Length: 287
Ligand code: PLP
Image 1 (cartoon, rainbow, N blue to C red):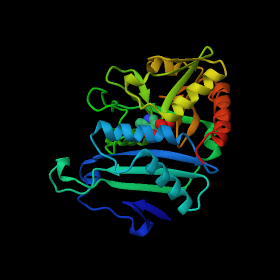
Image 2: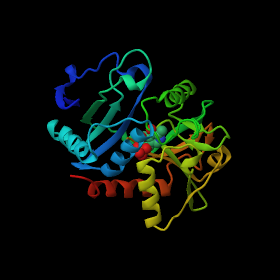
Image 3: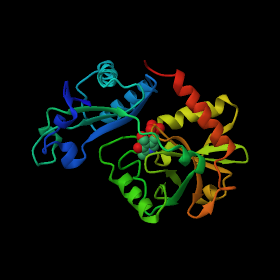
Image 4: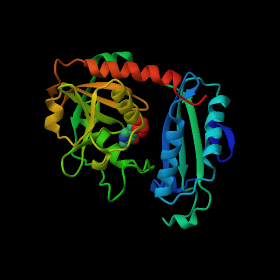
């Protein structure tokens, strides 16, 4: 496996960064998770836009233009002779000293890892996930915007730990007012009386690229698709609940905090949107 690291491809074993890298010392950096389907990189422009916006927000200068970055990502997939791949792009503040001042970091580290996709088991899509709400709250948008996909993902790590402790598959993260925001690394949707609802991102959810693709598909098929705040009660009493994300695509949630959702099986709307999403990813992408 070849890793793109600071201007060149190096073997996995040699792909190492300094212990003084502020990505390690302070979680100071940004990242993206991208997916290629049979040679098509899905929504690459959107992922690049989000990466550069995350970097802009934390005053991190990515040492390449978007076009160059696109070439690097495509190049990494080719170099590894991959067709379907999961791609992780990491830009950290780079090596500095032990002080936290980013001014001492003059060379951001640029890392692109492309690997064979580890598909989620089919059974999981047929069975659906169990989800549990956690005590850890989504960070407030006025403190650190959830739109910044920063390397400081401790918040999300903590909710995952809580989910593991509770013996559920995924965490339901609320904001400080108790409104539903998202999962640990995926957006949430509910379906009620034929209406599909996802929380507006201002409540504290990442504006997921899969989320936006699903909103678009839902509107294309004339579903009543809305972005509205909702609470756990609305989730418990929904007809269907599902999550979206680059890795998971669209997956049903069949149990939330011990409440069985409808008949406890993935619903019709969820299955329809998953099928349409999988059709779209085959044709829509950067070669
Ligand atoms: N929410 C969070 C916190 C995430 O980290 C991710 C994953 O990137 C998502 C949602 C889903 O976003 P996307 O569909 O762009 O992968």
